[in-house]
Every structure is written in C-alpha cells, then in structure tokens.
Length: 449
Image (cartoon, rainbow, N blue to C red; front, top):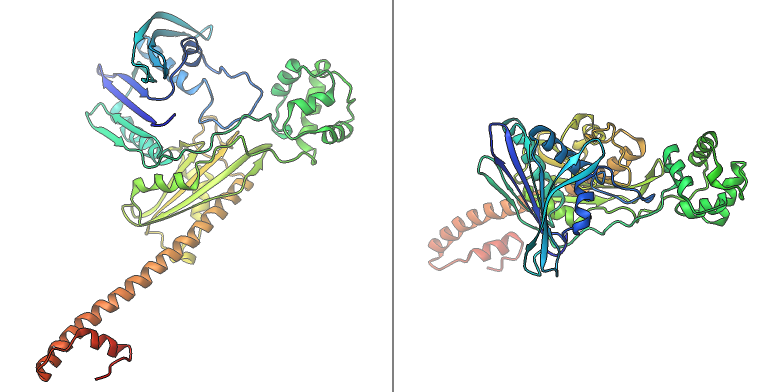
C-alpha cells in the first residue's frame, strides 16, 4: 500500500446465516484486464523466482470467494480505480470451478476523481458469526499489531466498529525476487525449470537458474555429480532429474541463499505495533539471516511486560506478517517459552508478559498444510530461543532499573514526611523558620548550624 494505507472491512448480515463481506483498501488499484486473473483464478503464479509473500499468491483470497459462491450461489463484485485515471472499473463475475477460469457476468466503466484509488471486493457467504466472532476479532487485533503502518476499520454484524489507527509511517523494506537456491528444489520444480530454460548446456543452466552459482561452483558441482557440463538440460529424464535433485541437496559448496528476498517487519515497526497492548516495557531483537532447507529465514523476537497485558504468559505468533491463531501449544515458539527460566531474569510465570515472534521466509517451515503453527526445527528453535533470551535480559534490566527508581523515590517520600515534621518542631522551638532543605542537607552531612 502507498502513502496512507487504509483497509475497511464490513460484514453485513443479510440472512439467518448469510453475510455480505465487503473489503476495501486505498492501494494502487488493479488494471481492468488483471482483475479476472487476480481475483478469479487460483494458483496463478508461474515465475521460477522466490520472494516472501503474506500467503500463496492466487489461493487464499480466491478460495474465500469460491466458498462464498458455493454456499450462496451469488457472484463476486469488484470495483477498482488507479491514481491519475479518470475512470475506474466495476466487474461482476463468478468462478468456474472446472476450468479455473473467471466468468464475467457484468462490467462497466465508472467515474471517479483522478486521485481516487483503491479496490473494493464484496461477496456473500454462509457463516456463523456467533461462533467465529472471537477468532475474527483476534485476527484483526493481531494484524493491527504486526502492520501498525496501516489503518484498519472493521464494522461487525453486531454494529460494533473496531478502529485501529496508524501508529507509524515507516514501512518494512520490500522483498526482492530472487532465483531459487539449489538446496530448496524438488523434482517437480526442477522438471519445470529444465523444460522452460533457454540454456543449452548444464553449466549454463546452473548459472542462469540458481542464485549465487557462478562458473567455478557450477563446474565443481557438475564434476561432483558426474554430469557432462555440455549436456542439454532438456534431455534429462525422470531418473536423472531425481539424481540431480539429490545431488543438489547434499553438495556442500553452494553459498548460503540471499536474504534480499525477505522482508522482516523491523524493530521500529514491531515496537510501534506492541503499543496497541499498552505494556510498561518492550524489547525487540532481529536475528541475523539463517537457512533451512535452502530457504533463508529471519526471526524477530520481542518481550513486553506490565501495563495492560493480561497476567501470565501471552504468546503472539506471526509468519510473513500473518497472525497464527491456532494450535499454539504445538508451535515451536510455545515450547521455547515453556522451557525458559524466567527467574533468571527476575520474572515470574504469573507476571503480565507477552512473547512476540515473527518469522519471515520464502518457505516458512509450517508443520501442517493448514499453516496453523511452525514446526519444531532445530535451527529455527535455536534462533527463537536466543532472540527471546536477548530480549529477557534487557527487560530484566529495565525492571531492575524501575525498581531502583521506585525504592529511591519511596525513601525520599518518607524522608520528606519525616523532615517536614521535624522542621515544624524545630521552627516552633527556635522561634524561626527552619527550612526542610537544611534537614535534607543534614542527612547528606551538610548541616552547618
């Protein structure tokens, strides 16, 4: 989103179990010819490049729309406009399940101001608001934490309007598209790459298709794999592709994948987002990039304490800036937090503490297809544990510093009460005013009278 991100979501109850979901933003809008592809098809990506995404492009949103169509038989309406254009576009369509193609029912050009931009998608779906309410509101609340640079407004079926104002203007650095790393390849992707490559030798294929592979690395790998550098990749059979994939996975001289394809939230953004929970203290740390199965990842951890936080341990989990709501106890983060010795940092289990984890990767190591939680992978667990321990050390020091200030202030207040009483007694006995400051100086060894 550009300049002033703003998302509005309305759920209007239009029947006993039928709702209309309206989602609006003020992003850059869509081109007319792109609308059917972006909204009306699933799994539209075809590039052999890697870049961190919030979800699987062309799947999540389309599945939601498909669910609405299946449960209500109602079409989808899309209204969009781009900055600098005098007209926007409105399209009403359905999804053809069998052909995975959009079916346009109606379209028109609509008037708008040149600076008006954004997209609105509306559709009807069957749902159970009463049972889903808590989870949906939880999702919005946590989304507002991880994207504090966006303004979110949610108009619920109950008539309640939840508003999350922008807290920071700074945006995370956008990820860059990168070639895949040799160690993150499966047979199907490798087959597609060899079938579509313009390279006519295996050496050229290695250099052109993978990141951080130059002449020397390509030659060493092909020699290690007993492959002819001049062989045409187009003639590789299934068995040869499987062998090639296995060799790619174990060759140790490949350089680590680049982290430029990642977009971590950043310390400033996370520190701003956690303020929605109004803690007394918070500390965030960003770990250095690491690698799992040929895919780079970055772990960002945070610990917040006190204030309006609920008593006890609270865990907030995010992956590629998406809140994770389910199966918390199965997540590697929960296991790390459970094994932390809080007493080492002057904390107790019943204290109001929030642990925040954000992992970004071109392939987040989810345990299940549903992407409910992060798998307990050694390298990921280690990064999370070290990050939390760094945060806890600083939180512990902040609490000790606060306690020292509190004790000093409490002592000074008691002395003030005592010296005020003594000053009144001395003033009465000496028949002249005795300043309380003299008594304070006396307490410091500075009384001259």
